[in-house]
Length: 293
Image: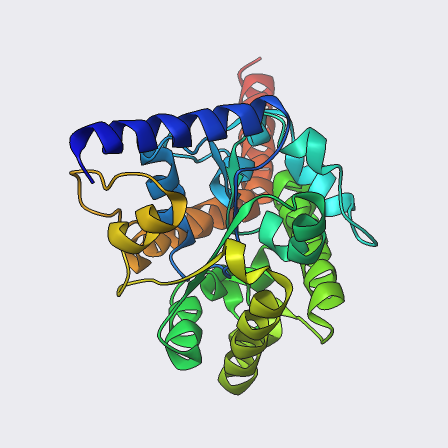
């Protein structure tokens, strides 16, 4: 395309996103599972002017764009309460133009019905084995109930001291139930972490169902690591940026998260000992005063 054509395409894309956001509609829906390049897609959509983009990072308040509207509005409560049906999408996506990754993608069937004009991007890995290996080195390190970290963070004591983590676990439970409904088969994240064969089957079934449900004329199947700006921009009808396609949310980031989570756990389980130590010091200090008197 000529420069004038590119400018027109970009203006149209920005106008499309603005009108969609103003009308409370989503312009783009991500249909891919977590660890298929969803965080990179979020960054790409925002570079293209199709953001803010809803993502788990927004819900947890760790988004790179400093928006975090979802975190400030406590959306985690809404997702966690949606155990038998979808939450109020209009409320949750009011200030967003697109949505990718969990928690939203776990309600993909309902999202496709709610937003019939949104473009759909199904991010994928090369195959199920690659995906299973990816989650094992990422979220499964602290969500899998078989790991020590997950066990120490799921006790009644820990959840009472750290209510935000209790809400996170409740949201995960609601997400499993939501995905099970539209997939038409059992979806249990912990099982995917513990059984690579189950994980591969789940991955393949997810992609198959997503392609069945999404209208072909509105669907882009995007293979992370193979596809980039060329495929994405052609699908969205916008010019390719001069910057490289984003590559974020690596395993090294999850290593940092795991370190933080362990530090939290150690601090929380040390609280009773600290209380005992303070009481002991106060008691000994009182005895010394009595003796000196």
